Amino acid sequence: MAEPKRQIRALHTASTVTVYQAYGREIGLPAARDSCLPATWQRDRMTWVIKPRRQTLMH
Image 1 (cartoon, rainbow, N blue to C red):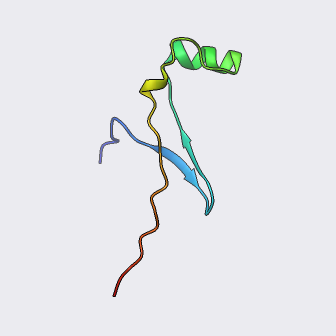
Image 2 (tube, one colour):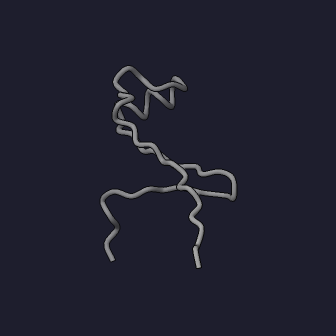
């Protein structure tokens, strides 16, 4: 099976979820160098991962 073009990479425990975000060189290299996101990064392009509510089974 071919690897999908887009995918979410994450680790989780019972209490946390860590999601890895990949950036292009124009954002990733300055961010790694300066320990902060550069001006070219846009907050409105972020995607949030939200923990779903626990569903209760009804019998």
